[in-house]
Length: 336
Image (cartoon, rainbow, N blue to C red; front, side, top):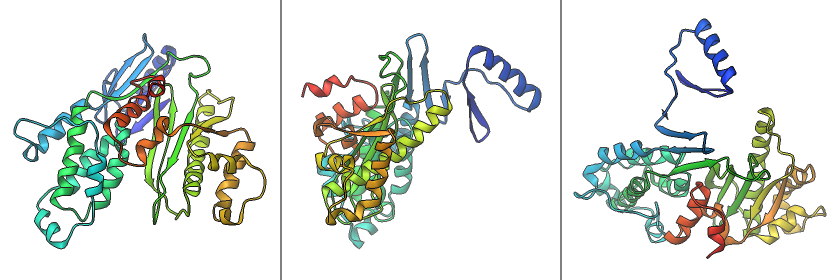
């Protein structure tokens, strides 16, 4: 398997295949083999095959980011932050007045936002919600908006040694098996949803964004996110089958809304008020009938996708983050 990125590529395989590939690529292409990669597009790769561990971090990236924006940080360095966006800070993110925008126009809000967004796409998936909310003010910001964004930078630096930690030390039923989580808050005009797919102890994808359609109830919002998650999962199942890791059983989609699960599992007709979501519901039902996915209820306090629907208090945020990123076992959520 070869993954190309502009003029660089990483390749994987058995020892014999690697030797054959290196021999063929050098003889047919003008290229340089630079040996084992320890970093790729700023992602530091810690691959411990003997322990069955793969860890992806961006520690150096956050150090350089803090150095770049140090003039906006305290003189003694970044403050320690446990969350990228607190519930109190989220409530302060209101539309700024013209005077507030004029006062803050010299602050590099878009530049800092881009710096924080980049790792949230690779190794810091738990920051996706914060980046989704803060990006809504890319063109209109105040001094308060910028201060809140600086807190996200400080969070990234505080937790710079963390990333995504995958492990092969799992039971046969868990190894190379996909698991989905889907959750959505209900809001007007559009709800904020989050869906993520886990495999081998950590997330392999996470999306946190507003729905493109308007939901008329919490159940409708949850069904929308379940549908979107089922589409992601079908894509991953097909990819896994292509590389020889076919998913034999239906992929679980954990949800914390019983009504949405009952509607998805019910083969009967829909009520009049739910006809607006009819096509998406039928799509989910078809995937369930084809044994591709199955929705399962999970308590809200253990719902990992809650990370992408709203700002959380530090205790719950850290507990969910550590499980989602592979730094804690699921059992930690069962203890409170």
